[in-house]
Length: 250
Image 1: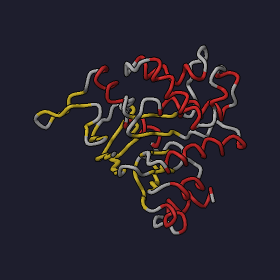
Image 2: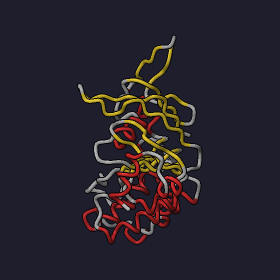
Image 3: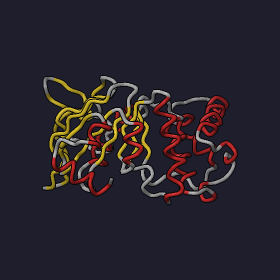
């Protein structure tokens, strides 16, 4: 579903991504771990072309993201074309980014109606289903300010799912939450994984990665240091940098 080939990204003189190559098979969960500043969030933003890559290529479901290739050269897509690709890639951020002036249900159905042209009745029916899935059907008529952080994040997940994406990206979705609220969000993500959603998750929740991920990727200083089976990697990492990082978390 996702193939990254030698992806590089610079911010001025700072090399944030230095040749990232990762493959994520359809229907699997890949967790990205690593210290702050290792490039994990930047990599996610490159996957849906919120950041331009400086070298390399990214493919989602076989389609080159953000560019078209002619004669061996890459030409960036127009903003409208890039937005069209982005419709198939759901993203959940650390901050919830809900519309504060719209109800929970209105937040969920806005994009399918405006972006995909789905009729309001059909969008509303699916919106109710999604809120049921994330355990918030009873909050459909309230506004984001009336919800806890964990509830807002579950609404954000429902909103991303409303676009029926092929791939879901999660950028530390529990990092802004109080500890007692983390479990509800992770439970929703576990159910998505069990349902076969392809997911790439930047996380510090090592227990979640051990339990749910099919692949664990450790990044540091803009490179993939080590990747493999989560349980094997967590129990016996091959690389010293991986072991040093995990020793601070486990």
